[in-house]
Amino acid sequence: IGLDAVDVVAGGETAGIPYAAFVSHKIHKPMIYVRKNPKGYGQTKQIEGVLNAGQRVLLVEDLITDGLSKVRFNIGIRAEGAKITHCLCIFEYGSDRLGLHEGKDTLAKHDIKLHVLVNWDDVLSTGLAKKYFSDKASIQILDFLREPETWGRKMGFA
Image 1 (cartoon, rainbow, N blue to C red):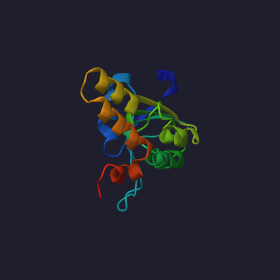
Image 2: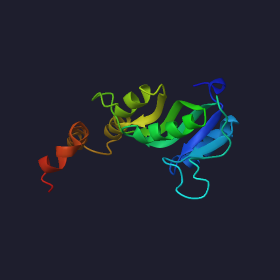
Image 3: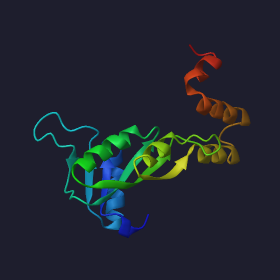
């Protein structure tokens, strides 16, 4: 990403806040946190902290699936005249192997570059290499990722 590309680190409510605090401290950049929606009382703020127009924001989150909550955060940040330029997530509920990148695709439509530390491919390859689960379990996980809506019925669950 590069430190010069970031003015402010944002944590998304609630799970992203501790990760954003850590990153903010490590890179010596100010931190804000952003809610999915403005508060329904008081000053009805969506953002806590100092955010100025034109600032470039690194959003830090724990997880990304479809990316829609990140878009909601970006709407609030853009309302203040700033912009999320990069999003760092600990885990992506996606897979290169299966071409599952709904969150990445969603963010790209909003000019936000996604960076992830781990996705399902990493979990599967490490789990198999360290024998945390069997080949059969790996296949079941891949089947679930391909079709989560129908996987339960195929496995005999109600």
